[in-house]
Image 1 (cartoon, rainbow over the protein chains, first blue to last red):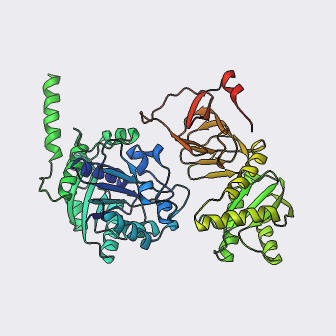
Image 2: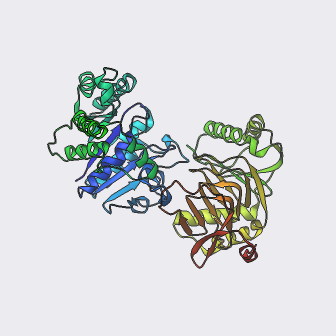
Image 3: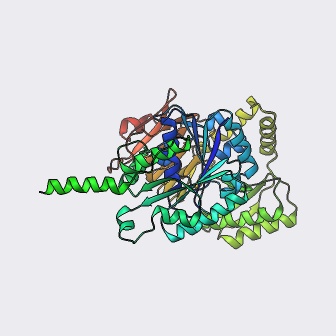
Length: 262
Length: 238
């Protein structure tokens, strides 16, 4: 029996879709059978980040409206045969599906997949309600900015009200240099405010932009964000992984740079 | 809901398909929205209109016509009575679909309609943006771009005097002679009749060069080639 995980944030642009793509790919790398569902109807993006846009024939709305079977709409990933994407519709809007239909869909997919990842749209309206229907646990993504943290707080409240089991926090786009100089909240500050368990910290990394443009998630690659996402995946399946100290890595790099300069 | 009202343009005029289930107020609202957003497309053309999907009494017809006139410059010159022949064909096709099997009769009717409409076409001026769908019964010439996420569906041919960066479905009633031409051919997907071709997976940072290309169907495959004289002489306008 699989587990349904919703990735949500409230605020837009904090990295829900990127997180969904990377966590999903990471879980698939570990041999889990994973399906990613883009619930952002009308503003689909996950297919682009995954580089699967050109394969879309049927979508989530077609499945819900019984225009096709689930199998027909699932797109197999380019690299991992146990990773699938259920894309969203671009020409409809959020009202095209209901929370009940989403729950039914999630329950059907649970039979076959280990993990079902729901990429939630920004906001707290119908799209959000659709995405959390049927979710067993939630990953709340936030950046260390007051506006994103406030929205995350609202979202966590709504998740609690809807009795979504576990809620974990991902602090995205952390800049160690700014935290050090006191210009940015640290992940500890964010956890203090939100009072939920941290499952990962992803540093701000230009490789994310490159990987998104190329349609290839970078999880597991040698860059800092790739490692951070891999650690999140390991924690999701229950492994104990220490939190990486990005500052230490940076320190080493700076030391090397300093040596080279001489 | 998106599909309460569906506007289909044909050479004779406009067919307005109204959802039989939806409540009247939301239909009127949707008609207003659809015509408002496509006002630029219609211009001040004179058109005939036909209704499908539900029976309208005179009052309801007047309300729809008033809504259309309030939201765009379009001039409705007459309301067509349901064409009994077409109505019968549609009803039959609909019934067949409900019972789950496509009948030869329905297909034949579709083929007949296709033959009538393939040689004609009309113009659309403007860019189609993400999420927008242009669905026409005839061939279509687009003066503008078809962006990523937008879709053009035509029973005939599609000619784009601009960039094609989205999806095109030509010969949507099954015509394999349909073709697609774009001044700048960079589609995500092209579908002709029942064959779908998708763009290659290589880096999306595609070449900056623009070349006029044609996409056509041959032996179950879709080919995209530069539009030269040889290719053009092979085009069949059925």
